[in-house]
Length: 129
Image 1: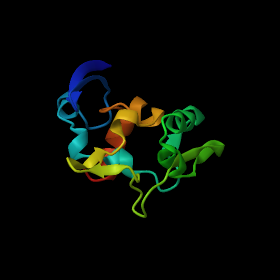
Image 2: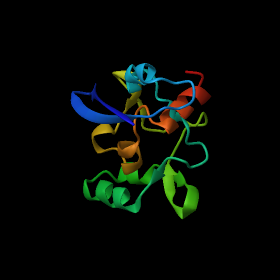
Image 3: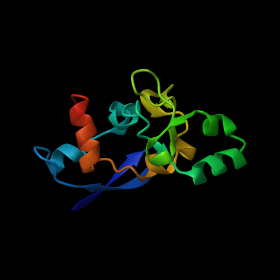
Image 4: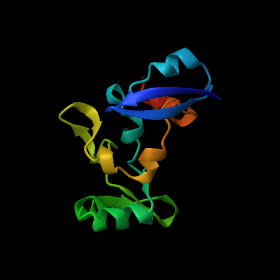
């Protein structure tokens, strides 16, 4: 597995790039989440899960609005609510239609999602990107 570093909103994030079918390392190095958003558009059936700890954290921060914008998720958990097209309700901000409105306090599932991972590339492929 190759490792590279990227900048997103002024912060440095580690990105683990893996081989995924026809995608090469050079292709994944150029991925920009703010021009994509494919992973944030996969939630129609409750796939973007929210661990209970995130719900507690948001409520403690006084952001019960986030903790209440949910839908039933897989495995008996809750998931981020989505629009009819499957996009997370928190997707889309002034800077980009692919920016997260709650980026600084986003959920664990979103924080742990790796740009350039096999799943990232699969979502991009499914979205025709």
